[in-house]
Image 1 (spheres, chains in turn orange, green):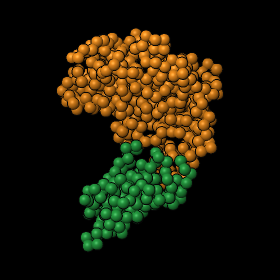
Image 2: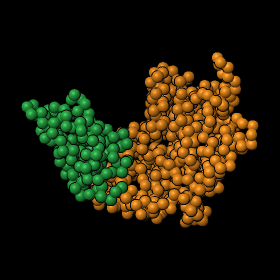
Image 3: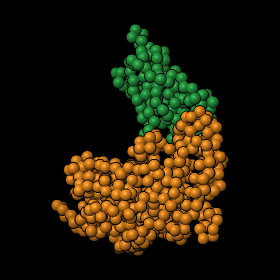
Image 4: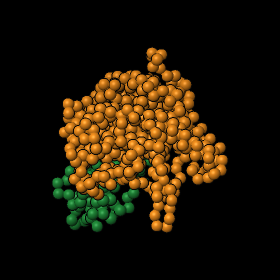
Length: 421
Length: 125
């Protein structure tokens, strides 16, 4: 491997305590990173340190611990804003996860701005989290959902002014994923947004970055969406913390999603006024320990460098696709072009008798070998329908994945084919 | 995965399932979907008008080894029984039928046909 593009994977692996685990006596091969990533010791320690040294409620007390907790919380907001180049950190709202971020936008912005017969444009490769909240709003206000379809290369049909065919004077918002959690496709978010704004600068755009931020460098100011969501637990951070970026002007106009403590300026018996940004959207005691963990995860990723992470993962993706492609009757769903995809590899296998191996069976047999992969519809049932399948097996890589693990995967798949013949 | 989940008896039923097919004029039928994977199993029953005994039980739909094999075994199990007897069948009986307790994530596959069968009973009442 070229020195420029290599990371010391053994050193990285040593940071992840769980990678020492044995599963049924075999070393864990964790290839379900698109579901959630594992956590380095640095993240686990940050959470522990928060509880052992700094735990207090934020923004409330005048005592030392409360000030420390507030500082950890607010400094992480700045770190996160820098990490994704989001500009002013008051545009970063902490949520529970990416799903909550989308729900916040659908409820706060959507219910006010989307009217009867308006159109919400999604894509066929969305995760349920970027479909269901819009379905609920659409049903309530009488709006219509439209979907950008995908082509044979598992890319969105947006080229040669195809995108314009989906847009109309009724289009209010376009919500699409940055990277597909099934196909691994990286959508050209910046180009798509530019084209949408050329059509009508009033259309708002939400990007679901849950699979992008952990694996490729993301500059929100460069992409320039109105809303961008992602989640800590897929980027080496803890569960229970997500991030919503939204443009300041929009956050200013929007009504709060959840209401209660800390999101107010003043409360009387009759009414309340809302707190300044970003706190207007952070009601109640927040997941401060989780935010501390996210801060450590961002630090960890920054230290390795997102550009380098993307390069290393691309090389390993290339290796994995190469090896998997050599398995007879194995079909990979996703772009061939390595520049257009990340290390999320979905596939199905046909056995000797022409029968499709059920992804659950493959995953169970792989589990017996200590190999964790995902099987099923991956919370993307509309995409499965488009592909004409019930589900897939999905392997998803991370910075601690190795070529040896891929080799073990290939052997285990051959074993599954033998058992399920 | 428990090593012996994919035992030969189970795999045989998957390759050559017994009781798989459709009954044209079924007396009762119901379907169940596994939200985890989208697998669907339909159970259809033919009941003797006189004795009220289940004469024929067939399942249809595609699925994994576990859901197909357990549906097959369940159909065999209920032939000769009456509808009220079915009410007593629970997931433990399914585990006995397939001979192994699947991991929690696979239990849904094993009891998919039972869920459909319970629907049948509910509709029949």
